[in-house]
Every structure is written in C-alpha cells, then in structure tokens.
Length: 427
Image (cartoon, rainbow, N blue to C red):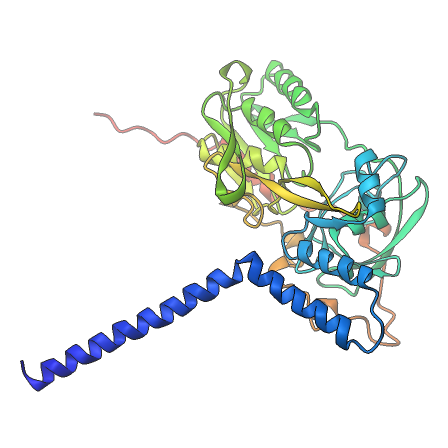
C-alpha cells in the first residue's frame, strides 16, 4: 500500500472515531437533558444555594410555589400549578357564580392571546378582536401569570368592569373597559345565496349545537339549497364530540378525528356513522385564525376525507384535555394528558389547520403575527407610548360604524362551488 493510501486510511479512521466520540457525547447530553434524576439534582442544587446563600431569609413555600409554576409554564399554555384554593374552585366549578368577558384565550410567546371573541359577547362589544394581545388585566401584567390565573382575573361578578390593555398592530396600545356578563353565543345562522348555495354560519360548537346544525341544514335543503358553505370563522370553543358530530353530517364514512396520548399514541379514533350523514352535495368550509379546537376537527376532516375545499387562513391550533393531579400539601398540577388530532393523527396544537385555498381578509392583513412575538420587552409592538403622546385611542368599535368590507373568503368559496365541473374527455 502506498504512503498516500495509508494516509487516507488513517484520516478516514480518525474522522470516524471523532464522529463516534462527538455523537456519543451528544447522545449522552440528550439523555441527561431528559433524565428526571439529572434535572432533579439541578433543582436541588439551586434550592440549596437559595437556602444557604440568598441575602435574606427565603420563604421556601413561595420558592416552591414559584418553582412549580415554572415547571408547568414550560410545557404548554393549558398545564398549570394550582394553589389549594384554586384546586377547590376547580373541583366545584371555577365559573360558578362568575361572569366573563366572552373570549377564547391562549398564550403566545408568554403573552395572553385572544383566539376569538364570542360573537355579541362583552369583549366583542368593547372592540376586542381576534389576534389581540392582552398585555394587562387591570394593573396586572399577563406575562407574569399563567393562562389559568389570567382567566380568574377576567372573571368576576356580572355587571362589574375589568380594564384590559391591548396590543394591536398598526396602532398604539389600547385600554378598554369590558363589562362582565353571562355569555351565550348566538345560534346557527343560515341563508340561501344565488345558485342554490346555502350558507351555514356556526357561532359555537358547545354541547347540542350539532343537532341545531342538522335542523338548519335540512331547512336549507327544503328551501332548494343544493350546495353548502360551512362558516367556522371565529369558532374557537366547544367539545371534540360536537365537532365530530358536525363533521359526520357531511361525511358518511371513514375516520374523522383522533385523540393522542403520550408518545403520540392514538387513544381513540372517531369514525363516521353513515346513518348520521344528511348532506352529500358539494360543500366548502371557511376558517380563519380565530378557528380552533372543535372547529378544526371539522375542517381537517373535510381536507383529509377530500370532502370539499377549506377556504381562508390557517387556524390557530388548539384542542387538548387536562387532568388534575393532587399534590401532598393540597396543591394540584393541572396537566395536559390528551391532545386532539385529525383523522391522520396530526395534532392541532402548534400547527393548526392550513386551508386548501388560502384567502386573507384585507382588513385584517396587518394583525399581529404570533410568530413575531418573542416575549421580550424590546418587541416593537410591546413598546409603550412615549410620554406626552396622546394617540392612545379606544377601539374602532366605539366610533361610528363603517361600511363592512367585502367578504373575500366567502366570495371565493361561492366561486369554487359554482365553478363548472371539468368536462370528461370522450373515450
């Protein structure tokens, strides 16, 4: 073997050895990062330093509570640490005797995020919009608290007011007062457009809504509707079962949704019942960034079962179930244990549902993109108004009503449904 060949063999062998060593170190480090024992030793070390070296005598009960909040906060917006009092409230029903503002909420980049206000609810009447960031509730910064705590601050006796400071792209921060009240979403709205196209506007997917949708669709059929548009824009709440029932009205066979557990294991698959399907004509679905949870079940089923076009913007991405784990001292850990997913097993959280035909609404094109929020104080959108700057204004909803812009998303859905079917070539 020549010297050149020997040299190449040595270099190649050394490279392989280096890769093996580095790969082993990376693998070992990854194992340590996911090793509860290794993480616990870090926490013990931090706790020991606080106990031994902190300048004042620490209140270890507060330290423990803060640590537990941080543990849950690092998971998802819906997992949280609960105090003894919160555990008691949770078990008896947090909203018992309380009224809210009528908005579906989540957290994005540590900010309290409005997925969608309930149509006609207190928040919408005060001018709150889908995509708004609630920076303060009264004088409490929402970035310092969990989603659960934020909801508690927003709830209160009916008729009382809560002030929120809103961040919205294209304007200075807005401070609005919202009067708390019991919230009831409007019922299903329907109408018949030209060319025998029925439009079904769903405002909620809470228990019992599927039966109402069924009745309204059957009424449209009696009025001569042969095609349907299912409008799910701004529908962010509701139950998984109700979303499945609505999808089943239009899809007569196959899987409609799944629940996913630890390790992406499928826990339950929801399959269409042919006897429950009532409409098999051409249909389309409308979604936007205020669509989440149960409504995403319907939209994803339309896409994956190839039932019809889904028009609009990418949905928010929500849908999960939590379980309360009691702790020794009476506190509790509310932990996400189940995620909702499409029939193909794609979880909605973090990804949402992408429309098959994207159509953005021009009047909302400048809304805050959650991906631009980092949770840092130097975010441009979070900068407070400068001293002496009096341009902080109330939301547009408090001013004189403006002419409604053209509904480009609905227009596109109608266009697709009325498009002539392609001619088949003669054999």
